[in-house]
Image (cartoon, rainbow, N blue to C red; front, side, top):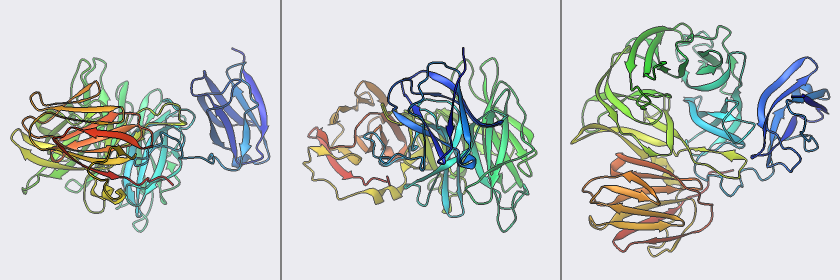
Length: 512
């Protein structure tokens, strides 16, 4: 295919390239002389108005001539221009922009990465495609928050390099400066991530201010293990005085495993143990693992949880090198929640989790979002110890005054409490969404999707509605469902069966 190229003067700090969400994907390389600025693929608008513009930082090349090369000979370039700011004037005003959950300003997002509290801020890194609303060009996006509710998006933190694109991972605060990247007075934040090249490896980067990041010149710190190894989660173990890494290692015969490795300094790692999951395509321990210790409510006991992307989990004991399960393959979540991760070093000790909601935002210049923050716990049940998820208590700060009990419409976003007066069947509708609970079968049906529910208990649930999904919590956190549903941020018709008691709170937007 003939290579097409054109030149543009970097008169302003951002080169704006037009995106056609439904267009043909092409490879793009931007250079200044012999310097390669960026290489990526995107659906470049071809002879039509752009759905949106992706901004490329070119301020370091101010006044110089840039060359944009494309592996396509039919691309029209009249829509390309340089701008003083990367953001459109109507940013965050889109009809399907989530009002209570984090979503990227532009482009695609999936897994949350590097959840860490550092220097008074909660940091959220996330898998990001800055150049399109579909998956690709994996980069670590970055946002910060003072309260885990209101977010400020910063520039991308980790960009693809010679080792590959930036797949998922975690972050820690190296309080004792074991890595030597900082000082005792100014400990570094260290990111641990998968470089998805040929082959996949595990690498690290560090920051002393939470804003700029330097990749370690000794990368990779863990070499390739198999064709499928990724998503490192790292914690400091006080008992062993070592860092512990858990990451996914898939084997050619489709055996899912996670491996524990240890390190004194985040740079040099030694394999400690292997915990096997499923084979033949089943999902237990498949990618994006996390592990953490929690107290068992009402007791002096604690247990460790090992959980992976589909939220199927195990409970047991961990000695710093190996996990010994007591119960395995326990159901975690249902619906569109995936690849959840928990925060490192929340100041009050709570275990807070964010998940990727696989919820499509059609026609937008962004795609997908995070969940609301969940607080995790362990409780004893008749079936044994189980993991619970509850909406973080601080979300109540978004509530406005409750609606009248006879309200026939709900504003979006909205928090809805629905309680059945007895153990009979119950139903309600929110816009185009129909909810029906059948106690006899312990099933909740949302439109045509059927979810497992709680046997022999009256329907009692809290639902958080936003533009692309509804999150459902019940039974003191034993049931969590995330259901994809497009609900524009306008007043939505509501009706409920007579045996339901309903309380509805309009929720204030977190958007700037």
